[in-house]
Amino acid sequence: MRILNTFIVALILSFSLQGLSEDLPRGPNGKPDLNGVWQVLNRANYNLEAHPASAAMHLVEGPVVPIPHPNIVALGAVGSVPAGLSVVVGGEIPYTKEALKIREDNKKNWLDRDPEIKCYLPGVPRATYMPYPFQIFQSESAFFIAYEYAGATRNIYLEDPGEPPVDSWMGQSWGYWEEDAFIVKTSGFNGETWLDRSGNFHSDQLKVTEKYLLFNSHTMQYEATIDDPEIFTRPWKIQMILYKRVGKDAELQQFKCVEFVEELIYGQWRAKD
Image 1 (cartoon, rainbow, N blue to C red):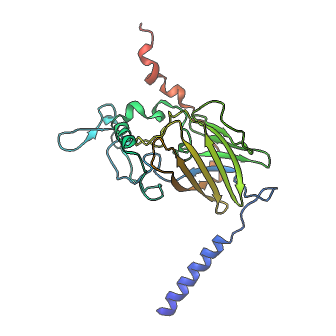
Image 2 (image 1 turned 45 degrees about the vertical axis):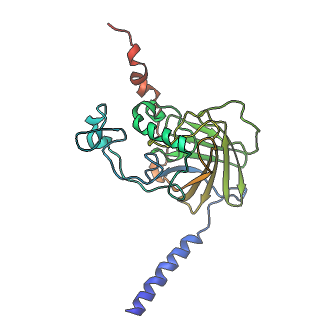
Image 3 (image 1 turned 135 degrees about the vertical axis):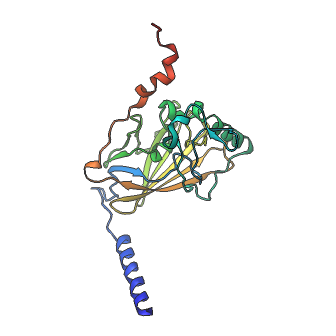
């Protein structure tokens, strides 16, 4: 039995080492080739922190336990929240006391406040872990990311362009290589985006440093360090795996959702018959 166990362990290790030693796909400049359609397989867009399954994102007091808000109760299980593990390194987001109160108030007013509901641009890093794929276009002279959600895009400058001329939803990004890792620094946010559906937020002082590290042809580690001294007591990091789509599934579809929320945002002003 001991010999059999030793053989099994050795076999597992051999496969593991084979995976680790796999040659990375590289471009003409010798850097890892990140081109392709990528997507997360996690629940971070619901909540970056660990969370149990629940009846809805927006709960109100019920006769015994909290129940879904009247505006979403008809969705039933479709409107419920699946459980998820924390993608925050260390487990919890280090809010200041005042900012934590705002986060909790955001949760209680999710239907009115989450920018995703109104199809506003998702911001960084949220665009990466929404339940929609995104595509990286990489060459020696350019790095561009197109997101399926809301048709969002990012043109990653390959030289530091200086201070952003204006604040925006997606900010201004520039990137560079540190050995095999592609680092992207983004600032110039308008402070209007959230980090997930659970009210986690930031101010217009946010600075994000992302790290894209290719493991093999099909997986990549993604990290984002969040620095916003107005909201958090210290910089903190999220970490997750991105998976590359293959075959016919490796293409973006259209999800330009502005027209889907016209009734929600402007319906009250529709001309009456």
